[in-house]
Image 1 (cartoon, one colour):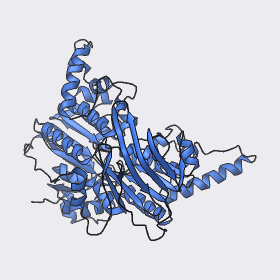
Image 2 (cartoon, one colour):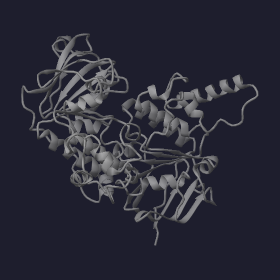
Image 3 (spheres, one colour):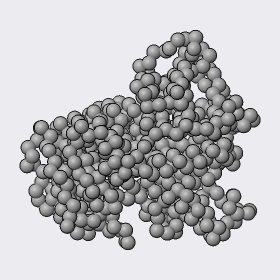
Image 4 (cartoon, one colour):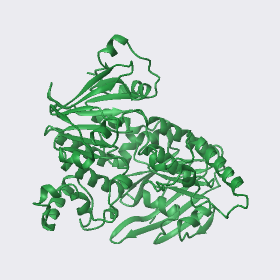
Length: 531
């Protein structure tokens, strides 16, 4: 018997009978893995339909079937009340269906304009300069819907990851689709970019488009969702219309099947006065420059919108930019000319952008996992495969990665399990300092809590962690100290932050919080300690 979603109350702007897409009894297997098991759903115009579930629950597979990337093994797909069978993604696009991928699929060396027009060029216009101008106007109009003003000829590789994520969304919408499937669209967005996207999603919904939002962020569901479907092990286990009385705790319980306590655990590892890392010449909002001390066993969050300067310290530590501060690592001057040099000095790094900056798609899980550990696992650069396999099994078990064989390609794993592998690789090399950028992007609640525990295990050994995350809830709940940034300067410092600090932190990073008492700032950032 198929699992049928409960009736979906229609958004006021659309008649209830106008159904965009219906999935009936859809099943899909990948080898021995059952991705979808007899699933039935419907996505209607004028609604934002949220798909929730743990990694491997089947959410992304549904999106890829709806978007024409995968064909179901069995079941029926209806589009506007007519059976359809998409042979590839272009057929779905031609029908008015857009799929926004979780991983970036931009051409990094092409311009903003070329990326948004890629695949939509059409026949060559006899008056090419007029055609080029029309293209530019269309791109500008699309970007404006997402609140973006960009140089159209800028290569996208020069843009921040969050801006690239917004371009990924814009690219999928150039053809003005009727159904939009977005897979973890907010995973790499900061507070400002997220609100711009939410504004656009609401406008598209009110214009009568059907939207499917695949997400792990409960706060996104609470803010945007008209209907929620919860999946587990390839099946629909719950499907309900959002109502004002439904709380985030209730959604979490439906998602996990158990009561969860997502609460901050106080760090007891910080050694007072012991700086693992000292950062000199840090600009403050009042124009002064001061030093920051990151304590041994401390988790320090650097929070700001894209381009705020929060990324300068991590990139300087890894030798990735020319705006280096003066660093002291364990009391000695520190400078790295490259990530490899930083790794050799005990500073490990997990960059944002799993597909572009993390995994090596052609290599196995084992090879990806052991890539940075070859010097420790063997002598003179020679490592036996048996040693690598043993090390891989240990790390995969410790990080609770769901996999079949460590010799399988890393792309055989779900996105969340790929992220666990990258976390395991970064943490295995961290001797003094671990830098994490968007460490839990695109993974489910349980997996996020597991990774948080692994981070705390590491700090218990005295390793200092720097977190740069667009997820404000994660930043607050995981960090012992949070520094907020605006226009390259520190605004405030929050020690032992709590969720009640959210409004103040958002105000800081948006530049809306006027400078507090100048005498306090002159001696350092304003410290708001929460008992």
